[in-house]
Length: 228
Image (cartoon, rainbow, N blue to C red; front, top):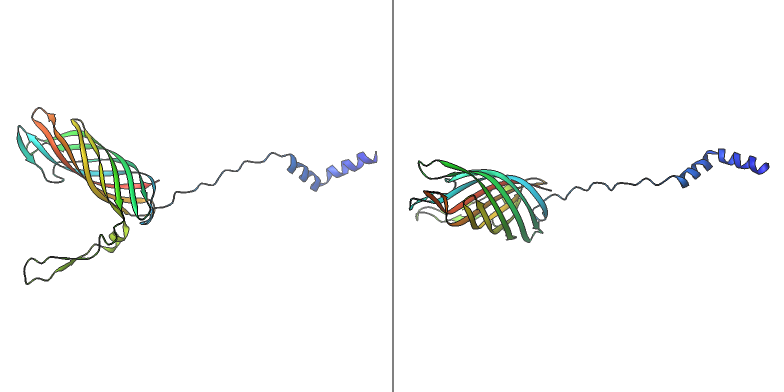
């Protein structure tokens, strides 16, 4: 009888009850805290990105066997999106990108525009290039003129990640062309980068319509990308 009374009294004590509950209650799973991706800097920027772009094209069209050479940005324009991955450790730059755009292609003077799509896949390779935007002297045009220093704003120079070369392919409704070019990428903010890109595309005289064929195209693309 005494043992029953003692056990009942012990169970009634708050400390003992709390200890029993602690031993029998199941453990509550804890969720790992969210870790934000590391922001890009000029010395380190690796990971996936997405973004938007605007592009201009200069075309070398053949209209009824009469070549029409258009300068850069005079052959129409496009806007679309980019998806890619970059690796940058301050010395080496590697990247792969896919972009797609809605395009209005100029068919030459008096021939109007043709709506189309533009897709591209490129691989990028670059190296650190210290002093790329450093100060240099411009040649004088006459003997009486002194060389004029050429400078780039310090903010732009300090934001450069790397210049790069790129190779890949571009698809239009009328054909596929091999593309080569170059570009440079800059850090604008913690997760925002600016990419300036140029591609020369060779279509090997692909037929656009019965009277127009495409020989080559120059694409200048400006992208604003978000580092994921």
